[in-house]
Amino acid sequence: MIRDMAREFAETALKPGVIERDNKQHFPAELVSQMGELGFMGMQVDPNYGGGGMDTLSYVIAVEELSRWDASASVIVSVNNSLVCWGLNEFGTHEQKEKYLKPLALGEKVGAFCLSEPEAGSDATQQRTTAVDMGDHYLVNGTKNWITNGGRADTYLVMAHTDREKKHKGINCLIVEKDMEGFEVGPKEDKLGIRGSDTHSLNFNDVKVPKENRVGDDGFGFKFAMKTLNGGRIGIAAQALGIAAGAFDLALEYSKIRKAFGTEIFNHQAIQFKLADMKMELEAARALVYRAAWEKDQGMDYAASAAMAKLHASKTAMFCADQAIQIHGGNGYVKEYHVERFLRDAKITEIYEGTSEIQRMTIARSLR
Ligand SMILES: Cc1cc2nc3c(=O)[nH]c(=O)nc-3n(C[C@H](O)[C@H](O)[C@H](O)COP(=O)(O)OP(=O)(O)OC[C@H]3O[C@@H](n4cnc5c(N)ncnc54)[C@H](O)[C@@H]3O)c2cc1C
Image 1 (cartoon, protein in one colour):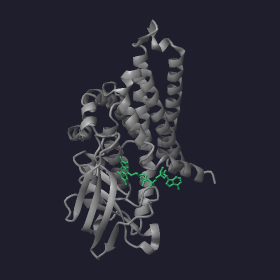
Image 2 (image 1 turned 120 degrees about the vertical axis):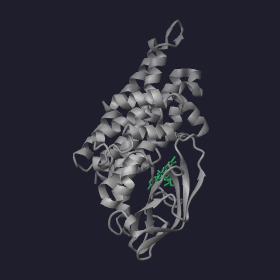
Image 3 (image 1 turned 60 degrees about the vertical axis):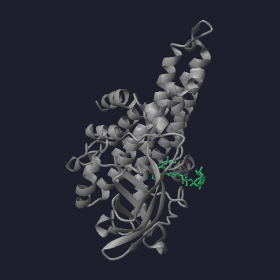
Image 4 (image 1 turned 180 degrees about the horizontal axis):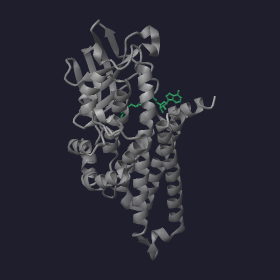
């Protein structure tokens, strides 16, 4: 049911304007509201706080389907669900859930997850943003970059150092509201892909954040971020899977229409072999993504499975998008046929929420 609903929404609502949004880097605010009404923005959140109370498998199926047409829309969904709502649902206080989680889960507000900094990407322990303990509040200073939903969010989960001596154990996660004094959104990034998503740097200049906005105990911020990212990776793996599936579908359809040398190009074995390889990689990626989601739902340690799912699905997205362009010939190289966008969108899945190199490190760590 979830797959059917997400697929129909992707075909009828996301597909029609997707090329124009990509061209103009247009954030699909109206579509985000609609996705909220359909329950896609807080799928795993406790129903008492406005969510769908669903499992991870349901969530990844929705992200996969949305990504078949619009990976920009699906990353808005993925960040809101896995990086913001999940952590608040799991570790937030009742008051934080009432005030912040509920409107995020209902899609009335949008969330952002702020870990990366100019000097802290893959090595997130190198946080320069500070949150000085002032008694009843923290004083936050610093810069975050590459923040998805950066200019459009209402609620920001911000990692910052309170006690540098304690290294990563001195990092806290604070809930920052967009209207707090001293909070400033930097310029929008002009990106290769997922151009409909809104990516900004953020500046914090003496932002006063009340103590009650800290998520978890003092020093829990780094652990919070890593736990959240483990789940987030399954969401990005699902995004990559959807891109691969979308590219495969279009390539298959085109191969049965386009004729060369007196027959549909599907009848040339070279094209059949490309489609066979695409289908095989796609199904392997799907099995890894669903398995990681299932392991998470079973309460198992799913870190390595999530890393394998993201690593393989992102490679598959790149492979399938590239092959889909080749199968489309010249038509594959222009925007009208969608597959060139799939290749540009696929690339980010090898970079954010841990690059492919970082996923390999996580997998290798599990082999010690
Ligand atoms: C469009 C977009 C959206 C994003 N959204 C968010 C967001 O919402 N929130 C957020 O916090 N961040 C976000 N990010 C940031 C993203 O997570 C980081 O870009 C990513 O983690 C990589 O960090 P970096 O760019 O600093 O690269 P670096 O860490 O500088 O890495 C550069 C290269 O070195 C490699 N490398 C680094 N260390 C090692 C190592 N030990 N061994 C082998 N290779 C290594 C990396 O794999 C990479 O290939 C986003 C980024 C982009 C581009």
